Amino acid sequence: MTVSTTPTQGWQGWDAYAPFYDWENARTVGRRDVRFWVDLAGRVQGSVLELGCGTGRLSLPVARASSRFVGVDRSSLMLEKLRIRFKRARLAGRASIVRGDIRELPFRKRTRFSLVMAPYGMMQSILKDDDIRATLKGVAAVLPRGGLFGIDLVPELLRWEEYQRQVSFEGQMESGRHVTLIESVRQDRRRQLTIFDQEFLERFGERTTRHCFSLVFRTLSVSQLSEHLQSEGFRIDAVLGDYCGTEWSPDAEVWIMLARKC
Image (cartoon, rainbow, N blue to C red; front, side, top):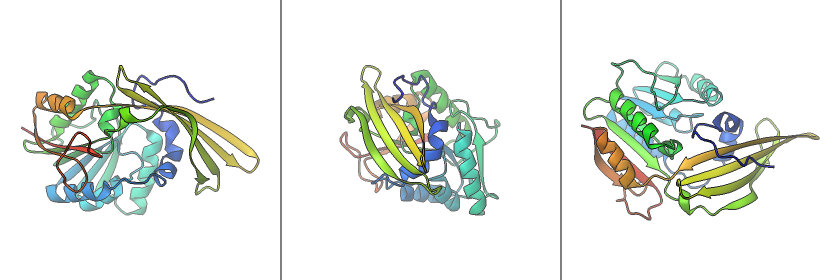
């Protein structure tokens, strides 16, 4: 049976997800965001902070394009995978990771970044307005005047069809274990939450282990986030509808916001 409760915090579930995150991402089609963030990091020509860096899907290529890169994430298991990858890529000299909560960024007062990036729905894992405001205050504190904050929203969350126990992916992991993802989707439209109940069946020989957890995301509109950004001292530079720079529209496939600290 899958998890039926709704996490009260968006970070819940990610440690349990860590062993399967890369495996599932390799099977997810249509994410063309890597080049966008790499190009953005190259244009700012300075240090970069990634919120919710996870296992480093974006961190490695962005770190290569940056003079200095820092990734922050709450999941120690995710960060351990990224630490190994930085070491193998010989990026340890200019790339580092910090375990912390993005609502309370763990940096000294004089720490500054040229770019802060919140990719692939990262801001939508923050479920309460007060926590969004706290996150934006922290971002503003580590950006100099004119520093850039990039946000990538997933617009289709509330349009996601509810379903029960569908096999989403099946295949073999590098460890040799056979994995099946059985997924359910629930909508809490009153609170604008989409809940993904995940059940990973990990089979090795005759032994099967079941891993159950839930991930929850909040739908944020461009207007909602614009109000929050402006309240915390940002101006909106651009709102894009794809990773090639096309102008935003409500039915765009992605919603990218670029804001500068005033």
